Length: 148
Image: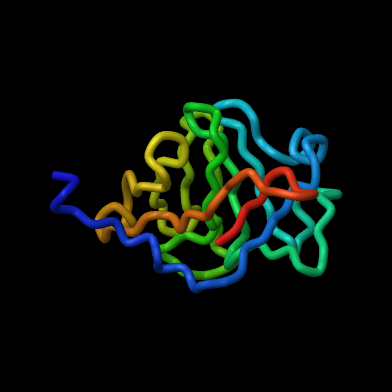
């Protein structure tokens, strides 16, 4: 069944994403390390509070959800709902169920085990998944980085 069904995860407008973590200490303070932990990064709103954003920092179209998956590995998604396609209509993590939900269309997404795959609502009906970003170990003076 998975081979016959395609998930469209490119509905969000292409915007730069660059969230560097300059040291292990900065990652420990603002990153995620255990399964189910998450954090929202929205540069225009100063979230998370006191994160050291720079001129080159960018948080995508609607902001970035940094999540730790079931294997405690970091994954990142754009916060904008791919059904609504508005920068201010953002998904939110349901801490009890560990899914993300759009407050407008009601679509839900698997953000902990299936990489932003739509679970219900208009997103599931249309096959719209969350836009994913790269989370990787960096080199030089930066420890971790989230990029497009």
